Amino acid sequence: MYKRNRIAGLDVIRTAAVSLVIFDHCSFMFNPLQKLPVIGVVVVAFTTLNEILGYFGVELFFVLSGFLISSILFSMLDESKSFKQIITVFLYSRWLRTMPNYFLFILINYLLFLGLNISVKFDFRFLLFLQNFLTPHPVFFKEAWSLSVEEWFYLLLVILSATLFVFLKVDKKHVLLISVCLFIIVSLGIKGVFIYSNMNYHYGFDEYFRKIVVFRFDAVAIGVLGFWLSKYYLVWWNKFKELLFAAAIILIPVSFYFFFEIYKYDYSLYKKDNTVYFFTAEFYTLIWSFLILAMFPYFNSLLSFKSAKLNQFFEFFSKISYSLYLCNFPLLSFFKRTLFLESDSISIALFNIVTYLSVLIFLSFFLYSFYEKRFLVIRDKFLKQ
Image (cartoon, helix red, strand yellow):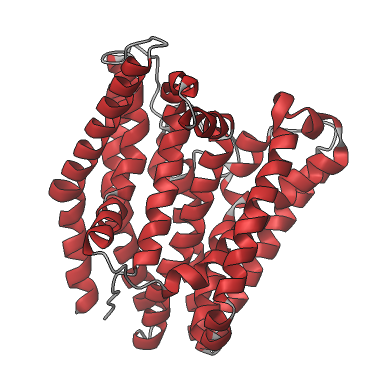
C-alpha cells in the first residue's frame, strides 16, 4: 500500500534535530572546552544558545513528522473507501511506530526514578498522552511532552480528514489543506484567548506554551502543509528551493537573536512587556515552523550524497533518532550519578563527552535493532498488504 524511499536530505534534518536536543541536555559537559583556542569560541556560542538550539531541534521534529506522515494519510485516502478503514489503518501504522518505545520508556523512567531514590507516583494520564494536554508536563519522563503533541495531532487529523473525505465528499486535494487551516486557526485561537485572559500573569513560555498539546498543533500542521505544497505545487516547490533555503539560513539566526534577547536575564522582557509576552507566546514557535518549512524544498530534493559513507552516516542516525531521543535524558541522569567526573579539566571533559555519547549511541542502536525494528517490520508488512 505505502512505500517510502529514503531521502538523504530528510535524514539530515532528522539527524540535526536529535543532535540539537541531545546537545541541549548534555551541554554542561562541554564547558571546560571553552578554554581551547578557536574551538573554544564555537563552544561558548553553542553552550550559550544550547537551550534555544534544543527548542529548535524539537521544532524540526514536528515539521518533519507532519511532512512524512501526510504521505501515508494521502495514500490511504486514495486506497481506502470507508471511514473506519482510513482511521484504523492509519492509527495502526502510526502506533506501531511510536507506542512500543513510548511505553517501554515509561517503565524505564519509572524504574530509574526508583533506583535514584526520587519520589514518583505513577500518573495514569501518561497512558493516554494526557499529561500535558491542558496543563504543564510533569517532571517525570518530561521529554514525552512532544510525543503527546504528535499523537493527539495525528488522531485528530485522521478523524478530521476521514470525515471531510468520506462524509462531506471533499476532494482529496483540499482535505489536507482544510485540515491544516483548521488546526492552525484553532491552535492559535485557543492560545490567544488563554494569553489575553491571563495577561497579568505572564506564564512561562516553555512550560505553559511550548509544551502544551492544544497550543502546539500548528507546528505539526505546518509539516502537513509542506507535503501538500510539494504534492500540488511541485514546480514552484522546486523552482524556489534555493531562494527559500537562503532566506531560512539568514532568518533563522535572526530569530535566534531576537529570542535570545527575550530569553536572557530570566525572560526579563517577556515578563515585563505585554506586547513581547503576547507575541512570543502566540507566534514565536509558529515563525520557527515556517522558517523550517522554507528549508524543506531544498532538503527534500537532496536524494543522496555522492559519498556512500555520508549517506550511510545520516541514514544510521536517522533510523535510531527516536531511540536516541528517548534514551538520552534517562541515560544522562544515570551517567551524572555514576561515570560522570566533575572537573574543569579538558581531558576529563572529553572523557565525559566521549563516554556518554558512545554509550548513548550503542544503547539506541541496540534498542532500534532488537526492539523498535521488530515493530517496524510488522508495520511495513501490514502497509504493503
